[in-house]
Amino acid sequence: MYPVIVLVLALLVYLIFSRGGGDSNLPKAYEEDQLPAIKVQVLNGCGYEQLASEFAASLANRNIDVVSVGDTPKPIYDKSIIVIRKGDKQDLARLQRMTGIQRWTSALNEYHNAEFDIIVGRDYEEYMK
Image (cartoon, rainbow, N blue to C red):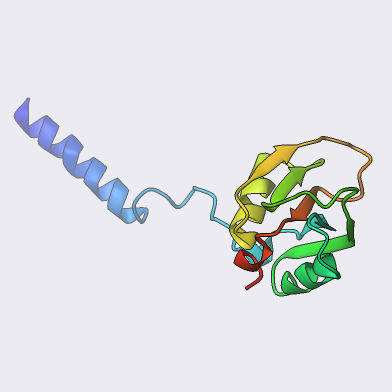
């Protein structure tokens, strides 16, 4: 019985190492530049002149497609926030990684022109790098 166990273990070890650790069939992770750009609308939420345009320009080197810029109806935002419009949680996590903005809320609208809104608050300097 003992030689059979040793033989089976040896066979398993051979199979694992001959296949490169057994992970050759697992999907490879994509780099950010291989994924589709995330469409966002940048909104000035604190009333500082031209802030939405300046913030949008700071996103130029990232995999983010700014489809429009504008202002919120009331400049009341102290903290920047991401609003999910029709995006998903995976894209939200990507957008949070790329911008550094961790606060988010959801206001789903399937007819919105972007997947997310970024409302730029008075803390904008933390995120414009």
